[in-house]
Length: 140
Image (cartoon, rainbow, N blue to C red; front, side):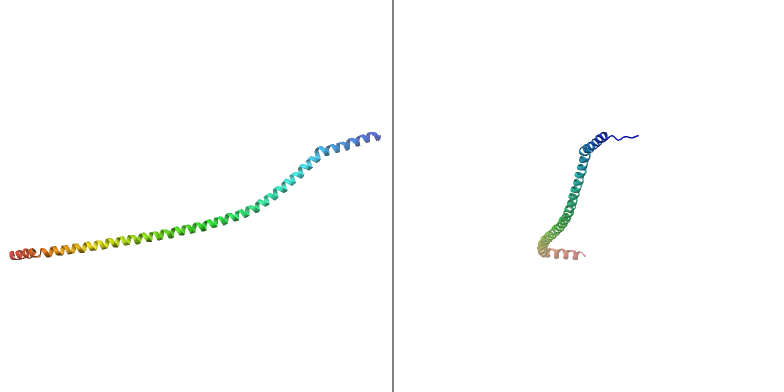
């Protein structure tokens, strides 16, 4: 039947143990080291992502504050420009009013002098006009 040969069993046991040691050093240990390094890399990347997420939130808040400040500054600048334009237009209106009043005053003075000239001209020609009227009435 089956015979057990002890020295052959010892050789098979030594080959089996040698194979286990060989596979452990060449296959299992590098594979385990690779998986440990991968786990460490994943954990490191996750911690960086969490840190960057926190940084992103603070940067987003800072960007919102900057935008709010810029909007407020823009509104202030726009209001200042509007106020300046209003004051400048008011100055121009006042200057134009003064210029028009001066022209009106000059026109009234010229009109008054022309009126006086016309009146003096009519007065100087009054005897001639009287004579012309007498001549016209006498023809009637």
